[in-house]
Image 1 (cartoon, rainbow, N blue to C red):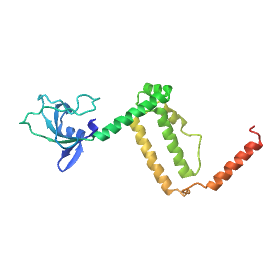
Image 2 (image 1 turned 180 degrees about the vertical axis):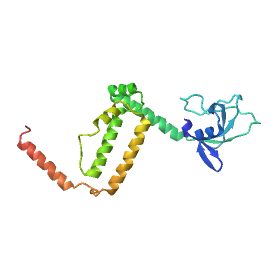
Image 3 (image 1 turned 30 degrees about the horizontal axis):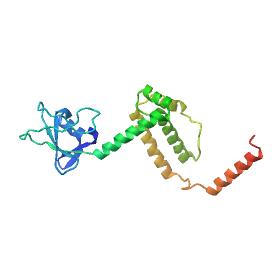
Image 4 (image 1 turned 90 degrees about the horizontal axis):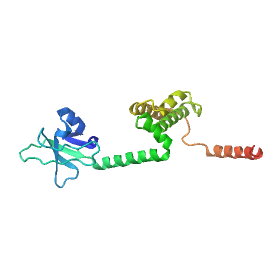
Length: 211
């Protein structure tokens, strides 16, 4: 939740976590109060052993904590909580893990076993499809047999950390964008050719009697 909080610093805004690091403060020693008539913006105070409740009480909190602030205490800054963004994140996170759990129990168990907190099979297919798309752009053909089968199986088995795989996937995506930008492949498929090919394949199939 702290990742969805921002504070006023100078003439701009910075993430709360960066602000706390700059100040060498702990969130547990911060106190917040509402500012009337301004949605999701709070006055932030700081002080050790003043009984402040912190910005959040525990890591699973869904609401910011509010504190009783003595009148003589000085406000340090303003804090903005992107509550809508955080709610959307929580909703998508829950929906994702509900999908993982109920879509395939064996697959969910594999995700739990490798302990990397991501759907390893889905990640494996992400790399496979990105690489195949890159080959289409560069070589103008589809290579079904994968030359890096062992690497893909290692992804499926949860060998790699999610952050590392995401970095590699982003690199592949950038290469893919550049490859299609420079490719002379047509913008649209030749539908007449595709329809004719489908017709001929069906004719051959019927002629052989599905043997």
